[in-house]
Image 1 (cartoon, rainbow, N blue to C red):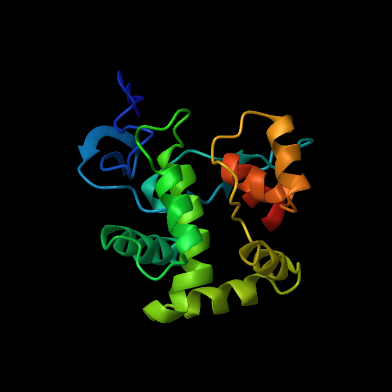
Image 2: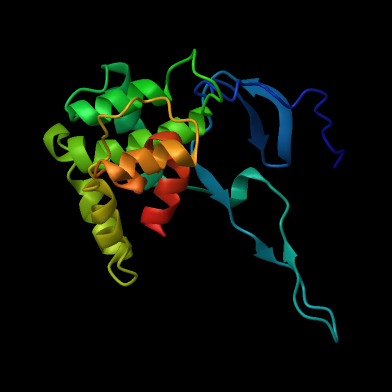
Length: 204
């Protein structure tokens, strides 16, 4: 089988939701462009034949027959996408201000779409899903994470009072110290300035 050479593999802007992808066939990736976002999925490696005296290797060739769809992720993505198109209703005033700040196209160091979508997903599940007829998301997460206890960490994350009456433009540690002297937690400041790092702390 001849290997497909894709001269320009970049189809989408990192700051916008993907709208195109390269199609996979039974023989692997093609240079055919599909005008839609690729669904979330993963590839199942197949053990290759054992060779005497060697451990079994895995054939990891990416072909369509080995694709397994992430059904739950795609369902959540659909709900979050519909909520985004409707203007992100049902959130607290603080969350709305943060979402507008993170998604501001004029801000310095713009966040990638994948970062914003991750933040939207956390806020949607913790503040909106039950009101939007999607309580199954948290129920599924509870089942998935019962052993590790990460749902409790997620709950703690969602209850953070991540607001501050100080000026939004904070330049460095001195400004954060001023906030803390006023009784505001340093985490509140970090949350507004570096959301993805705070999500990682709260959910791992």
